[in-house]
Amino acid sequence: MPVPRSDKSEMRRFTMIGFSKLSRAFAMLAAVVFMMVSTSSGVAHAQSGAEPAATAANAQAMDYLLGPGDKVRVTVYGEESLSGEFFVSGTGLMSLPLIGEIKVGGMTVGQFQTAVQDKLKDGYLKDPRVSAEVLTFRPFYILGEVEKPGTYPYTSGLTVLNAVATAGGFTYRADKKSVYIKRNGDTSENKGELKPSTLVSPGDTIRIGERFF
Image 1: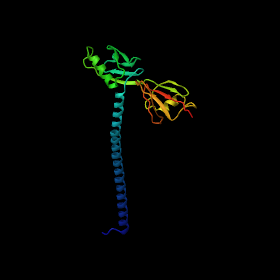
Image 2: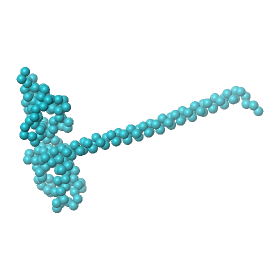
Image 3: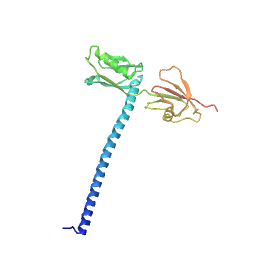
Image 4: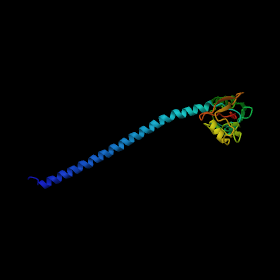
């Protein structure tokens, strides 16, 4: 028995609707899969990019030279009574539980960790594990043509211009083109061009000279 034309049209219409819904479903599924793959790739990329930066920061921290005024957190794993926060004295010494005073001035953080471990091995602990972290860096000093010369706390990434701003800014007599810096441990100061990128290290002495014209 032949199917009436109206019924055929209705069947084609329902078939087309079905294909349309199926196509939309496939499109939505493809979009979800694409988003999942993109997100996973992005996370992996971010993690791979973060690791070198973290490694570089850790390496820089381990190479920092300890000196008078530094405050260091020392952790001896499994030995809470031996852990704590300690200062480097004006003579470069640090007094620690059990091992007493140890000369740390001029040591890197990594060398300090090794020295403490070796001292603890010598008759105190069988296999000590020690970590150290600088909590407060020694201050910097700024003199000369700034509004408030003096001693100020050091912060990571400090520049000469930041230091000047901390000291209240330049005086009207200041030479804003050059700066004198005596690096921590040096016996004399060095003159250089005053650039926005000129960095200050913990313990440095900065001097802003007077202009003569």
